[in-house]
Amino acid sequence: MKEFFDVATIRSRLESIDVDPVTKQAYLSTLLNINAISDLLSPHPEMEEEDGRPQLERLFQAHQSRKQQLEQEFPVLATLSRPAGWRPQ
Image (cartoon, rainbow, N blue to C red):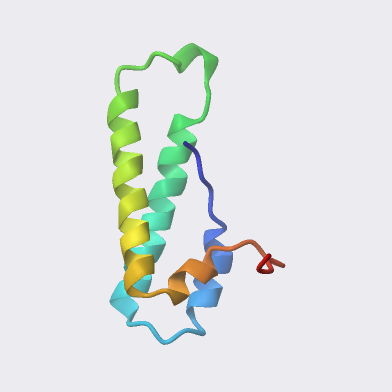
């Protein structure tokens, strides 16, 4: 349940698309939050049974849902988070 995005690359890619600035910022914020929560959910042996883990997992899912919603509304956003050199199969 971890995911990390290259936000600097995505930010530069956002400059070249025709989407309103509020949506661009919402998408970047969502990706940054996913990165941060993913880091918190990364395995740390001494913290495996942390009390807040279920809440973090729910928060992660909420941000994933927000990302998917934005990508459904603005399909071009889905292509921005693909790795460099990505090609359709």
